Length: 241
Ligand SMILES: [Zn+2]
Image (cartoon, rainbow, N blue to C red; front, side, top):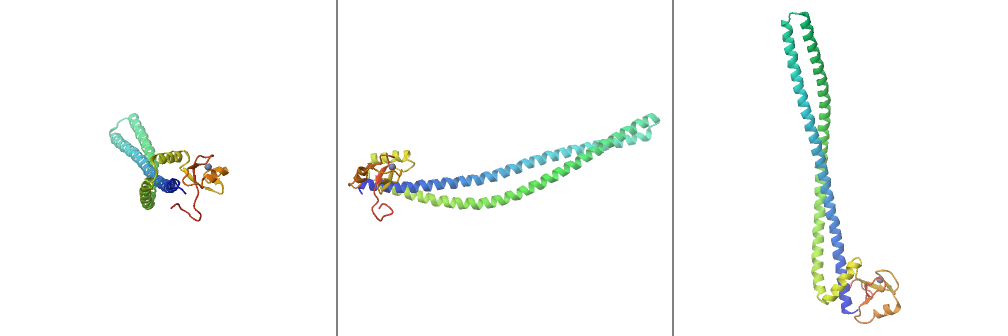
């Protein structure tokens, strides 16, 4: 294998490692975001229920004031009853008292309903808060694991970027440019192995003269189907050294 082809193949191996580490890193970062979103949604849920509880409590206070006012009115009317001289007036005030008592008992009924709602909300909020706490603990642990894995990936990426830089120095910038352009157009794979007369990038058969030209020293040969550069792997080797 010629030097240029060999360096490009090495570069490709390094770049594929970087690509895969970056892809993995991104999926871990998305995992962290998903965990954070879940916690945030639950917090908002609790905030919503808490606001509803406050509104219900406000309604309850207003009704309680209502009751206090009715109670006062009833007491005043009952005091007036004692000084009343005429039958007609007595009946009128008695009617007022009966009406006020009816209103009061209706409001008391409303308060009972509100207390039921408020109790249900309080129970739901405390359930939600417990769930939130559990979720925060669990997602905190998961997040820690993901961050540790991201840290390892960052180390792998840095290491490969350094060896990429060193490797790239061995060939001309114009060749790197060509390789980079091909990579962009061919899903990250610019140079591929040719084996048994086929291009392993697109799996198409190579014309015999193309395949044969790969045996010549340092010739850059492109697959006529996918335009990727081709190389022959020395027999019995897994990686390009
Ligand atoms: Zn091809």
